[in-house]
Structure formats: C-alpha cells, structure tokens
Length: 251
Ligand SMILES: NC(=O)c1ccc[n+]([C@@H]2O[C@H](COP(=O)([O-])OP(=O)(O)OC[C@H]3O[C@@H](n4cnc5c(N)ncnc54)[C@H](OP(=O)(O)O)[C@@H]3O)[C@@H](O)[C@H]2O)c1
Image (cartoon, rainbow, N blue to C red; front, side, top):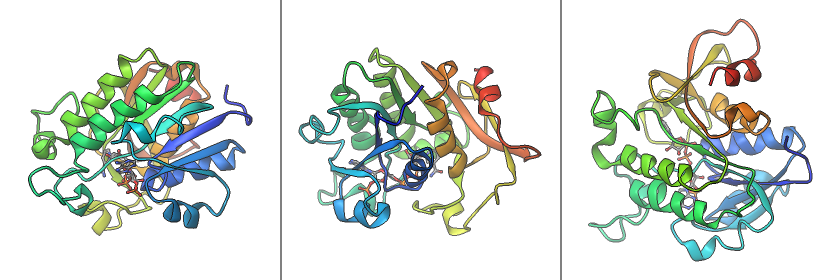
C-alpha cells in the first residue's frame, strides 16, 4: 500500500495522461516528483505542488539522480506514432525523439536507473503491441511505435522490478496533447463510459485519458496488478462508479 511518505516519480508528467496522473496522486495526498525535459513548463502546470526534476529518458546520465529515493515510477512518456515536430528532426534521417528513442531506448534507460527496491514500475503502453500485423495496428505501427512500446515492455518485464503494464486504445478526453483525429475532434466521454479491462492485448476501441490515469494510480494500491499487463477501454454507459478492486481481481 502506498504511503504519503513515499515518493512517486511521474515520467511524462507534462503530457495528457501524465498531468491527470499527477492531479490524481495529489488528490490522494501522495508525494509526487515530476520528471520533465522542461522545468518551466512543469512549474507553470503544477504550481509548486510537486517536486520537479529535469531529465530526459533518452539520456541515461540525466536519470541517475532522478530516481534517488523514489519508491514508485509511473511512466507516461511517449511521442507521436507518425512523424511530427515532436520527433525532433534536427537530423532528418535520424530523428532524435522518435518512438525508437523514447518508447524503447528511453524506457530501457528509466528501468536501468530505477532503484533495486522500487515497489512498482507502471508503464503506459498501447493496445496492439502483440497484434502488430492486424488492422488497424499495422497502420499505427508504420513508423515502429508498437515495436518500440513492446521493447519498452520487455525491458520492464525482464527487470525483476514489480511492474504493471497498461495498454490503452486510441486516447480520448483532454488534456488534448497529441496530433490525431480524436484530438482534432476533441473526442470525449463526459465521464459517462464504463471502464473495461482484460489481461493481455485483445481489446479494441477508445480509452479516456482520465481512466488511464486512474488505472495507473489505482494499480499502486492493489497487489492483484503486480506483474500484470492488461488492455483498457471504455465500453457501455457507466451506471456506477468504477470499482477498481473488482476490475483488477479479474486479471
Ligand atoms: N494517443 C493515443 O491515441 C495513444 C494510444 C495508446 C497509447 N498511447 C500512449 O499513451 C501515453 C500517454 O499519451 P499522451 O497523449 O498523454 O502523451 P503526450 O501528451 O504526448 O505526453 C508525452 C509525454 O512524454 C514526455 N516526453 C517525450 N519525450 C521525452 C523524453 N525524451 N524524455 C522525457 N520525457 C519525454 C513529454 O514531455 P515534454 O513536455 O518534455 O515533451 C510528455 O510529457 C503515451 O505513452 C502514448 O504513447 C497513446
């Protein structure tokens, strides 16, 4: 059980899911360290409520001090699935912040930097990592994002750290930080959709960023999520509050 003396590192804290994870942790009165590449951005977002640590998961040398004293890591980092400015095309032929650099190498670096006594490494991956040849995942993987997410997952599973791997489908609900159709349409659930989870990688659909963030945080409170991987989507209309203990017990 997480206590409010333990520090939780949120990597990708300035992202859509990351911001919601930070908010949820603070609402539970837990101690948050936000890992960011841009201190000023995080400072303006979190208004001195969290400890801010600068680091870039692509560069292992920036991570050693970052993970000092950390009991939990929630990793919500990512870049776009398709080429965009986020890939950092300073070198046209070898984008510096591609999925291979962030979701594979970066996650490996974060795993390697994690303290040996880490209590949990929660990773936001993606539906489709085990179905890369099936539509629509074959399209999504055109530039290797699912290959890279799977490499990140494999590094975590091979690490001996207790982990939880969460695989959302297409993200909906804000903060709208991506460059995709759902962002363009401001697609949302209005909090009305129930959460469905299932072990492995068989679900398809859409997933609220709010529910992904809730799953990341709630997972820390349940041993039933230790060393588990699961997909998460929104399904039928919600008729009662999400019962995470019941959902996690099915894994
Ligand atoms: N969009 C979808 O439909 C979809 C579907 C399934 C899974 N996912 C996954 O869900 C996760 C959350 O999505 P999202 O929309 O919330 O992501 P997002 O808003 O794009 O946030 C990505 C975060 O990663 C950080 N980041 C990027 N490169 C980094 C690096 N080299 N070192 C450290 N931090 C770095 C960014 O920080 P900066 O502020 O420094 O840029 C940002 O905080 C991502 O892992 C994504 O791959 C997305």
